[in-house]
Image (tube, one colour):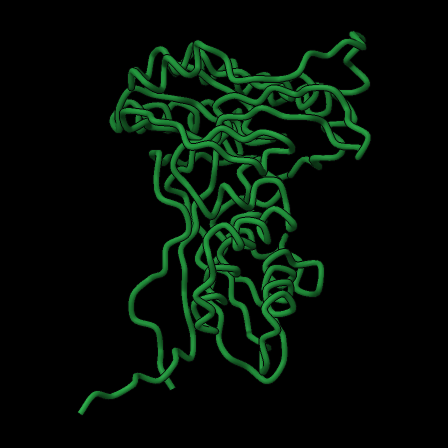
Length: 312
């Protein structure tokens, strides 16, 4: 006789950070947002998000960046869970959310967006919704520009505000070193600084560069290092001048290329191998110009459900 397994009491997912290999900023639209063209790569620096059936909504955070994560209704993972519950008319919806936070907050690596993507997938599985992927991606786009990519992972071109994705057929594995800052940067402030510094009123429509696409298709890390570009880099330097010294140091110590990730302040350095990445970490740490360094490789998958959920 067949048996029906009980629904899971909790679900844990792992969700990666991202780096922007290229970020081009276009004109300001009527909605107040700039048109973007960006090339995302998911990298192996992860948050874990656990959702557990509960009597009331709650969110707690552990890990090195826990102190910087809001615990109430402003928490993006909480907003994601509530949005999904409303959209799918889930009864007995409340969950307790626990975030093990290893992706920097306000670091340009999609830390909050990763948690939102993780909460969507975890709750969808917990509630047994069996949603169409496209529908889940639409909800992700409502939550933030980077959330759909955190669901998808890999390498993708983002357009619009970054939420419209097209996968990139790329070769190779890339080894990154991330110079992390103890103080975040506000994305709206960085875009505001971009507007202040941009004197050319005829900003062109952004599109991926041929050099970037060729580098990714070839799997050549040196070519990718040469192609890294971010239109928000100078605004980030303007707001945080010390970041320029971090970038210069990494390049001096032999990185194949360096770039501010997203709106910063994380500085991402591309290296040629795992050993090269380790050497660069040691050199940057010894230099004293960085608060903290870590390394990761990419591309990696998007949100993944971890095995072994607890069952009622």
